[in-house]
Length: 66
Image 1: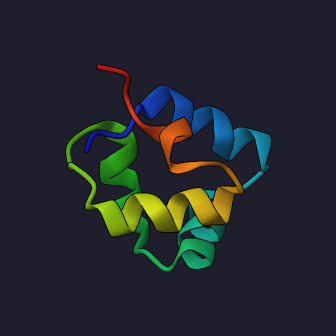
Image 2: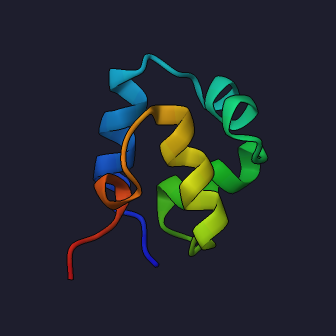
């Protein structure tokens, strides 16, 4: 599963989260979040679920359309 980095950035901005706030709220490391935002790391399904829950969106809203 690939995260759409643009959609992720939009949702982070919409929620007014800093990287540190989102990583704490989602229960992932700040380094992992930075790697996902830059596209250097592919997210596990559990990680996408954690981010979606923290951002209050559907998992599908964060995924790349293929």
